[in-house]
Image 1: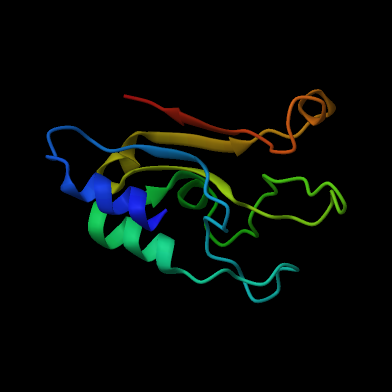
Image 2: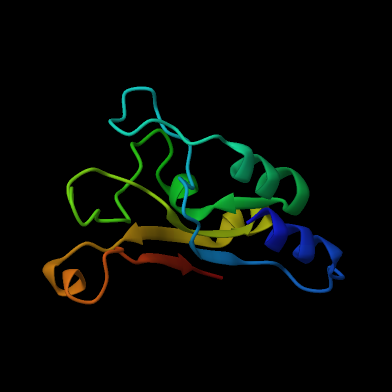
Length: 121
């Protein structure tokens, strides 16, 4: 991830940057009470400081435990939030919703629950 961000940092900033996908580490700030320990916050800090990006899910759901995006093959109930969408912090006023979709239909398609962002005008 650092190499990808290093490369993105070399690009001219002529457009807004949106990043989304499976980051393979938690993409939100965990509460100490959550069952999965927090990952080191380097990614979130770097996205905020260098690229002025915010996590859509956490912006819409402040102070909530992270939603499960990865359903572990051996332990499908342990919540792990490694999928996310990051948009420019200046888009906050357009951010209407961000949901993690969890239903049996997704179970056969992937071991990840999709993150869906709704932006308005």
